Image 1: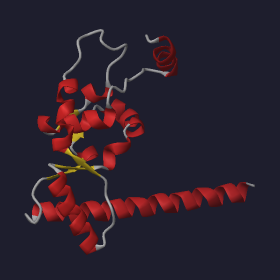
Image 2: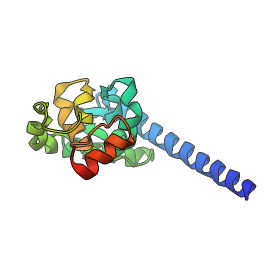
Image 3: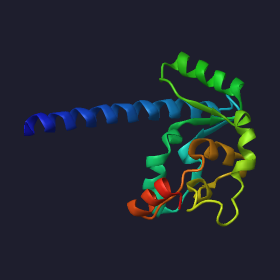
Length: 160
């Protein structure tokens, strides 16, 4: 049983490493396309486009599945990126188009005190550029940060 479990962990590690390398080469190709001027309107990987205090690093990594999405200005830019990835054979990516997120801008404002039972994760993110805030809101919505499991349970089941 123990050998089987170790083998499973090894295989999982290999798969994660392979996925990480694929993600890295996709990003490398796209960022080279941006740097060379071949494709204008690529901002980069969402997780690289802002900062958050270190104590919330685990929270955002856990709550935000979109950290690896590539942020672009619009659908046309995403299409050019797809064409570049296809021609280079680098792999695939998920794109987050900024122009499609503008309807979320009003929700990006920091809510008044007491509007939520805890701080929103999105309000802790400091985007490199304020124009990117809707992309972070798209990814995180109104996810709240709890100090511990007890507080999380209270918020979830008692609304406090």
